[in-house]
Image 1 (tube, rainbow, N blue to C red):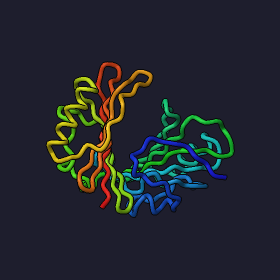
Image 2: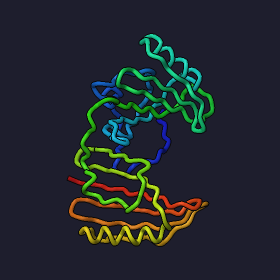
Image 3: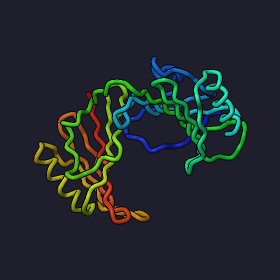
Image 4: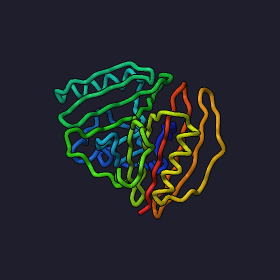
Length: 234
């Protein structure tokens, strides 16, 4: 039986069925709970400067069964494991040398199968080089980077920044678009202002050679949040 669920991800992340060991990488390739099925959301990612792999997994048994199997595996490996209830479900984690394994089990009805999201983070490595360097994409002035995620899939690379920016969404969007145009970016699209529960803002798209930008600024609870998504096809 196939399973499906969605997560927020950069536009270039591919969803491909492949073996878990190929996803985790040579240095961090242990399988704490054998999956029945795998969906790879990001085989080769850099999350806030750290190499990371992200997969969706379908596991046999209930959430409690999976938690016990996760803990039993790391007990045999003589590695401490943690279980932490959270707003997003149950969070299981273990630090095995430089390899951090985190299995997030979202809230779900107990049954013969449990779905989860497994991330494998490789710590202590030299800071990896981005395919989309910081120098290529000027970020909004005075913006504070909250998250920075780059994902690679063959010849396509995507990098997404989430920023906290002082000022209003409309003012920041106009100022950032002007900055990009001064740097040689072409305006290829401007969406009408949008509104949703607790937020409203504006979005636009820019392009320069083989790089594309999708940008949005939103006013949320008295603060402005910017999302800058860059895509490179080369």
